[in-house]
Image 1 (tube, chains in turn yellow, red):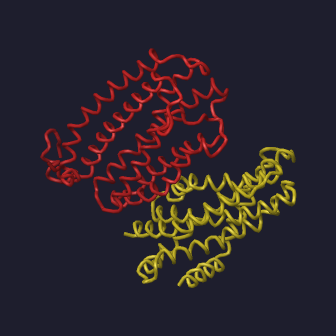
Image 2: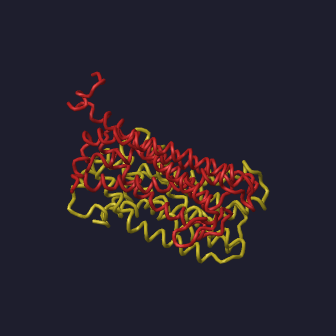
Image 3: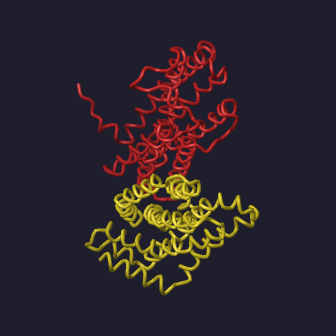
Length: 219
Length: 246
């Protein structure tokens, strides 16, 4: 069943490629706006790069949260999923994983290119990509809770940002912090360990909380 | 002697109990507030390091304690309401949120007033200040989620989940001064060590904390009563209350 959910979501995403590309282009545009706003001073940009890329990744991941459950909710699939004998948490985990594959992985692949725009050294580019690889699944996991809670509400899109962004802050701090530490020549192991810890904790609790939220929203 | 606690889990009987108790807690809050402020501003000695400006501690610390404590209490009642499906617990959780948010805001605001003379900056991005700011966002998120949902029972349960998820932040705020090397000073009062301050200062702070506590209880009871009336407006016992009109 887990494989079925992932395959179905990926297939749906392939049929609507525009949705996937919009998130990616949003990410690229936001990152590209900063040099225009702050000025093309390379020394400043190099310091700001990790934070900018990470904030843009947060926003891009959050924007695509609405699509996680809403289409299934509107066409009734979600109701069938809730009725299925398979554990809801497991199915939700599948949806989170496919959300990460569709929105998180393109961001991770794009990040080194954007890092080059900001003149990051190569070692920092590797750390940036790795930190995003470790951090973007957390965004999908935590974001799913917010997406499930705001399902079918008025103004759900704005509300989900209010619920989810405060919970994203620790990921932002340690994700961007890892890159900054590497640029400064310090060790970034501690940041990676903490990101890994966040990932494991949210992997355990987020599917369960999301399943409970979905049941509340579908009552 | 045993008290039937379940009796007060019913909104109708809680309504009358709360109505009587509000007065006691309000009076206690007023008396403690006056005593605490008097000790804080007239009795407590001047700090040898921070001068007179340290006196904002008598508001800042109690308020910051309450902001964290109320979030835990709110999440606790919301969780009880979610687990046992008791209506009153969820109503209490909803009633706590605005008071908690106000205390969080006050803690940040008084912190800025303390920060300016001490650190020379209204705001710094260190771990404790940032996590306290996140706490404010969590309160606001809880309140706006509940406000966006029309069905009160669904609002209760959805709010409970987001409140319980946010509890992770509380230990982070509390231990941030130990875990990170921050500008914010470490805790001056702790259970395990003898306090690092003069007795009068400590007394002032503890009395102010009690005042904040009593004030919170009074406010929460009052707000819970309002919520009970709003949700139970179609019942007969509300219709029979004196002074209410349909």
